[in-house]
Image (cartoon, rainbow, N blue to C red; front, side):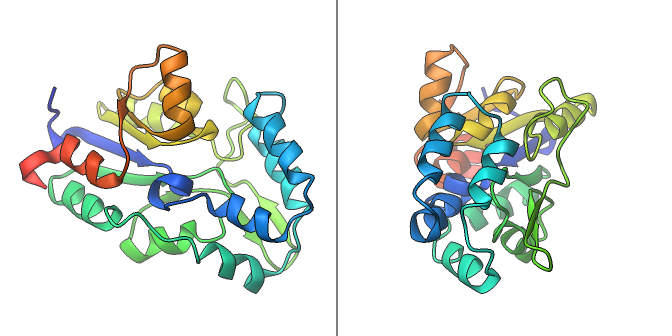
Length: 215
């Protein structure tokens, strides 16, 4: 079913969705104490929430801005990202980036296109990982960035909500979005839990599905 693009609020995950690989995993593999893999596995199994996972993994990294941001920037963006954003905006849709990673490059990527970004960030003066978009009023109150909150807000405004994601941090948002595009781990989770979704491989697939010839 084709939706009116002007009614869409599209929420794009960053790591592994806008980027071709997870920038957090990239820097962890390069620079972290190997114990990060145990922490990540606990998070994937649902044994710890994302905020605890991120803080534990952050403690295993050197807090060197040039080192970490430089490495994260090595991960390419999906070539379909900018065309998708441009086409959605031209059609009247709202676009936001929602990310629950370390926030090393997402703010710069979103800022370059003027896209609102809801993401964690690092205070490099102290080396502290900060969570400006956590939602302590949410039922779980445990995510770094609450991806459900902006979806609820858009739905209350009468928008058709679209989530595009690939990983564990997208699961709760997938339960609320009107339309879910999923790949990798999120697609497997949705299939296992009977959450309706459309599979995608690249953002060009999302472009075609949402806008077709209009894009």
